[in-house]
Amino acid sequence: MAINLQKGQRENIDAPKFTIGLGWDTNSSSTGSAFDLDASIFMLTENKKLVSDNHLVFYNNLKSPDDAVEHTGDNLTGDGDGDDEQIKVDLTKADAKVAEICVVVTIHDAEGRRQNFGQVRNSFVRIFDAATNEVLLKYELEEDFSIETAVEFGRIYKREGKWKFEAVGVGMKGGLQDYLNKYQ
Image (cartoon, rainbow, N blue to C red; front, side):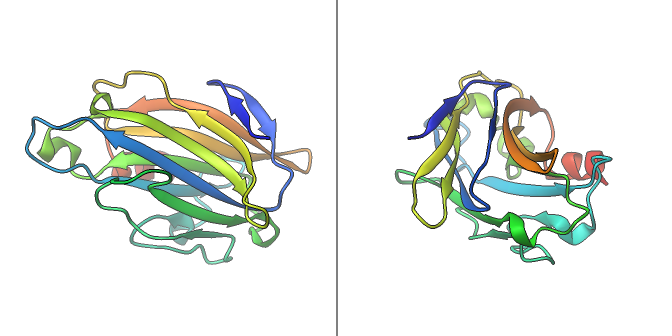
């Protein structure tokens, strides 16, 4: 049975192989442009820096060099029910330097399209067991991010040899490059 998390809540992840599903719906936009939300994974060291440039997994780099993280592909519209983007994770393959996996969603060309997360609803991140498809954890973002164009949905981190998930739900005005600047 899935555990529904609140912002700031942490839970153990007991399955070494799982999939991160991210979903969202967009309000009908008065900007005239379609929304393109992008899920990205930052694989970080204990110092909260990227292990290497290739440890940023996103629509232009679908797999980490250690094969621990694989993005299944970019959804350009977010149409339909369920997950809009998925990332497969196998913690048994993670580079020994990886201490944290940060899950971020950004709006592609948000400034040019005059879009923000205030125009996005029903946003969630869920983690489900890759073998059984059982949902282990789910976190639904309930905040109104009216000026933010990027949101850190959650983070998976190692503590005392065990992996945990924290529901973060923190937005920022910026995009993928801003997170790259933060973690490089």
